[in-house]
Length: 258
Image (tube, rainbow, N blue to C red):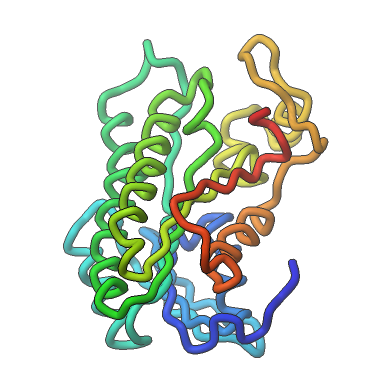
């Protein structure tokens, strides 16, 4: 992780799913680069002490599937930090299992968080960005949105929806100086991945080696990503270093989607 100190100095960033492994890595990377981060999660705030020489971290409890919570998050950001110029949609859920055994409630909740939550947060934040003529939105999707995966139909479909929405939003906002991109992680060392297997070591080994019976290729680079690998990509796309990049998906999976 190459740290560009002060890269986001004074900017207000909102990150959803901020208590998750990837979300928390994004929050820390933005803060250490000077951003003031509103970290949103359904879980109770823990008031983390941010790293030294960085921006503030303001934790807010909120559910991205609820319009009232989304409005409250934006109001808190405006009142305590300032106008939102950066948004990361990192909240996500996954229910594993074959379609034949899937429950409607699981399907609906998956889409509520992974797709509707992206719509609600992006719509709310984009309005102010467009008025000010500047902003960047990054949605954390998945390489599963572009690949068939057994036991992951709802998750893959919801991430595909979030990816398509973010791309369309970016087209509508391009003329207003707002960029919208997607980061698509592959297997990443998080509780979401390890929860799919008997133990964490099985999760890492099967991810790297592949599972022929499930039509899963392995990872050519021979390693599972860590959350900072994903955060690096997100932070790059938010930054002015990516000022001419929009409507794109950056896949971070070690070549697994070959």
